[in-house]
Amino acid sequence: MKIKHQLAIFNALTRLLVILVLWLMLPILVENVVYRHINNGLVEKKKKFIEHLNQSEIDDFIQNADDSTETYSQFSSLHSEFLVLSRLPKLPSQEKTTFVNENRIIEGEENEYRILQYHFTYENIGYELEIGSSLAEVKDLTFIIKLFIIIVLVVIVLVTFLADTFYIEYLLKPFYKIIDTKIRRVNEPEAFDHTPIKAHSADFRELDSVLNQMMDRIGELFKKKNNLYPMYHMSY
Image (cartoon, rainbow, N blue to C red; front, side):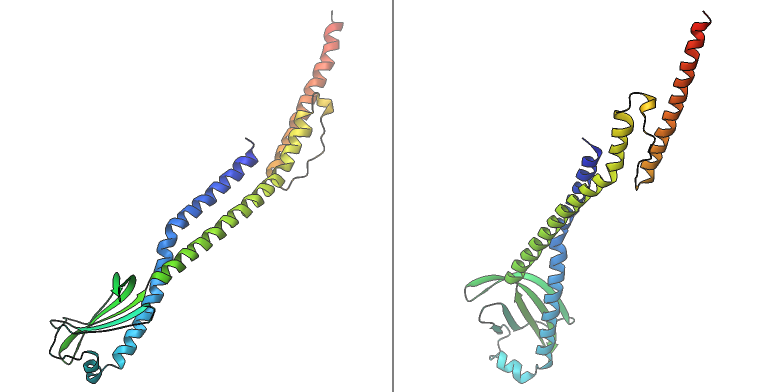
């Protein structure tokens, strides 16, 4: 296998390795970005809900004030979002906000949601606020993003592979010319072509110069040998 093919294959394999690493990391990277965006949206909704919260609204939400398990639920028509406000059996030690992914069944339909859970105290009563956003569309979007990125990376690999192949061929052109004109076709020192090979690489120019010097030395040795041969026969 020629060196240009080895270099092209090596470059292609390294790029494929990069694609493999990105493919393994993409779910984590994309989900982190998407979840951060969802979390920010849920936090904003929580702030708006808490800002407008008062006892009369809580009473409207939870009709039976004597039932500590009473829960108020609200959800969108497509079940993409929901809000749940419920009393806690005891006061929370501190206000706490957490994010979890859970499956919830709403009107007989089960979906996975990103849920903000907020424990807080209002008028010496503990409450839990849950605001959920469906992950169904997010997962579809995440898959589309990953697929798009992989397609772009594959196209980049193919284009750069072809570019590398042609560029390596261009760089090695002086080398093959040196092999063809100064080694393969030369049978005698007198037939050696001392014309410098045009090359952009200093390595190939140095190789060409060394070959010229080597053939000059070989030519000098042949001349000395040819001059000594008649003198050897004359002595006899």
